[in-house]
Image (cartoon, rainbow over all chains, first blue to last red; front, side):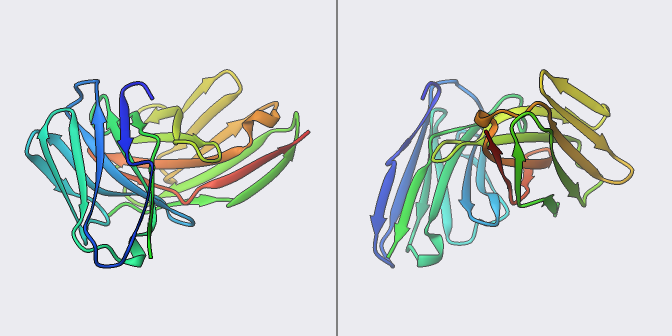
Length: 112
Length: 110
């Protein structure tokens, strides 16, 4: 997984609990993204970051927050997980910005 | 926001035949159109992309065409092989807002 790693790879949690997913890159790219993938919906952008402490909302941001305190790390937090947030979550980096996304291996999250 | 529709949702072809996947987009400001391939249990990977100032692009057995007037673009795979079996996603983007189609599951039968 050269360049970008996600952790954990799998997680099962209960409704109402907080969950944090981590994305780590070694490419020093400014832009990082969080997507969720669900059958019939393709990939949908949750949040993205264009630098340390600089983030913006995507298409499906409700119920999610993000933080980026270092160039290499982009965290996605579900403050109070719901069953509708059961999904596969992909982190991505891009160069140039907004193009040629390179995805991490994904995190399978199940909220019971 | 941008809306991308992709057809068909499933496609089955015989090895050696061609496969075509079509996408339409709604926002005429979109200027970048990538295609991703995702094998089962793996990450999506970029296979080809095209910008709005180009009408067609080829890379070996893969080609993409873009019709800006009609706001649609297509992926063409010739001489399909079993290893082409995967889910293919189109996308349309302007700036950092990349919207994906729902995907096409391509099966190539030997």
